[in-house]
Image 1 (cartoon, helix red, strand yellow):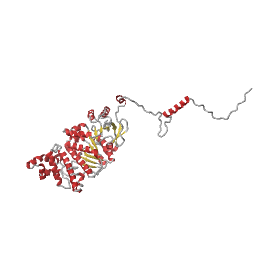
Image 2 (cartoon, one colour):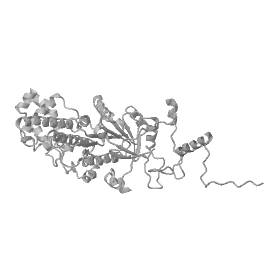
Image 3 (cartoon, rainbow, N blue to C red):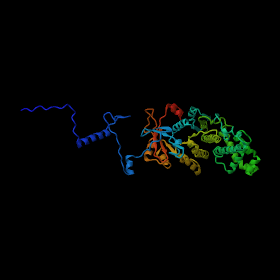
Image 4 (cartoon, rainbow, N blue to C red):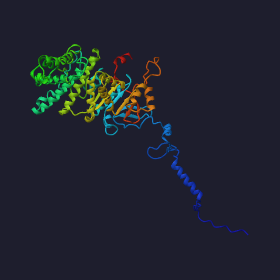
Length: 505
């Protein structure tokens, strides 16, 4: 007998079976994988991309001598991207900037910068870039003695003032009062007396530095000669109220032997002549012979402290020899900084300065006069917020001075620079640097690799020295950062150090 047909219920979705423990584990694994591995189109969300695996990184631990083999700490962490862009890090490609003024109190204790490399490796180009950028930050570029005339194009491009000295182009009075000439006599008597005393002390300092050169006394004046000069400068200034005395005026006072001067020296007649004979001869040498036309009259072109930038071009003195150039550097450095310092004292100027001291080897070899000026400038720069940039070829330049006292002052210039920028240098030079700034073996190898070309490149005609535009930046005891710089077309036009070489190319 056949079974009767069963009645079918209406269609409905069958209830899925309850997952067992294994199914739940598989589902959890799939969800975990979705969190670890991106889908085919990459991770979703803003800035998502096709990254199939997100690397969480690997942590290694070990003693320092072993970890150093994995990561030799060749370079330090990147510098803040603020200030003057130097170029790209040669290893990482990131932007490298220097900001000596902004680093004070954070990375450094002072704003001094020491720049050193072989000739032709780009020292001056870097210094000019610093001047250019800091002028945009409100600083005033001041070149107190431009030996080659290489800063003229840049200063004029910034709308600045260029004063030329030498060979008929201009004359400088070492006793010039600068911007205070029109202001001092408008002050009350008490304030005027104090300011005149300050002016006379600065005049005496400049005159004493010039006398110490080979064309003056050839040595520093002794205590009797300094006393005679102090009184003679004061008397010469009193004889021309409202104006500046000149060096021939001081010579005239010494030869006339007025009573105040004789009383000052406690000498008369032949004894007075014996005491003043050498200093008169030294002053005569400053206004005659090879120096004639440089310091024997009023200043031809005054320094414009209201200009965006200032440069004193003494390149015309190079034809007269190193001794004449040294005397010109002493006079222009003292005149420039004294004028600016006096303007600050009286409130005529409040801008901060960028002071490049280029061709420092000439300054150091000229004698103690310029070293004393550089020493005072760098000591005051931190309080004034100025940036002093000392540029040289070798640390041996600091040993060129005749006495250990002067050499100690020159070495102190390096100690007051927390920021060092080292370009192409020899291994021997870097060993001397290590006494002042610790260099790792990798840093020394990199710098020495910039010091000489591996081939002549004469067949191509466009070979570039391997150290051109490459610098190792050392800040305090931090590991160095190596940067490679490239000039823009405008910079290449403004920064030419050797125009004759450019013409040959």
